Length: 514
Image (cartoon, rainbow, N blue to C red; front, side):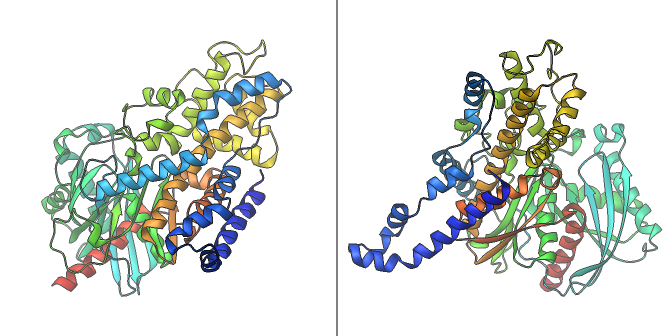
């Protein structure tokens, strides 16, 4: 199905659904039903499940050999969902959210970020951000006028391998050194500068400026920092230097920063989504629903909740969609039996799932049958990256095969026309599943927020570079949440700008209390 026809079909059923709802009072009167039978009536007259089923289907695999086609489709069948499975996934997600927010056992941590409001247009002056999430980090200066960024300065720094695995004090002393270097270079060493600290590692927040590291990820392993407050460590390191007036006022992750950054572009922003190498989402929750609140409350109406949905399913609640391909992908990962949802949807793993599927098809004699293709093809974990999947997907979108052939030739594969079709089919099935899973959860969030209109701020390499991810999501979400209007915007650099903006919010909140 073409992108345009998919989008039109999705909008058609959304409009049909809305128009039929206007007729509900007449139908109730005619059939002597009460208002509680609304959904029953809709199910009778609106083919929602059929529409959803039609929309989520991938393009059919067309091969000369019909038996070969059937065998391949059968082997990939569990990577595709029926409407019933889609509804079950949403139901499980909602239950896990409710359990997490009530501090019951759940695979969703539902962390309170202690950010109770967004920018209100009164923010003025200079704010810093420290963005730590990998081997390179950034220090950023943002100048605001009426809550709007008018100037930005940024510098990147590198963290050597010995600092990433050594003493925590050495690491944070280095971070403080780089912050001082940046501030002094800007000539601002005598100016009091609020700083927002983007700390993109699992943490437990006790307040807006207290975040305890749960565990290091990526290439970091400073063991003496685990269970310590990252804000306190940075403050102490800056105090030891004593050469600037930087004040650390907030800690956050990149997802929260994306929501806040998005709010400067669209004031209706209430969801932040990262869909890149990793994935996570956050949203504006009613404050009275949030049980984990360690600081004194001051009549807050809303607060940003960090879902930490990469771990959705770590407790087994999503095992009903797990395939043998997913199990092998998990076994090949650095941390087995963790980040379950992320392994279905994120850029770090999408290419690996495709590789596992292709290797299985090759092993079963269904792919790369030419004599020139030798055993061991695509046998190395991590070789097929998600950017290559995006290249192949671009071919499917354009009706071409140049990218697909180039990718396969890199792996020493000489494909025929049937091979190209199969590889493109596998990439579409795996990519479409990822888009559908993200859409299911976003639709659940729209229903939970339940506002007239919500904007979803998105950042991340997979969202930006995969040629169909955004289009699929915009087609699926209206079918899954037909009564909830939404927009999706690209909010770049939530981990940088967003952190500086959160510093501005934190300063305003503190001034209000003072």
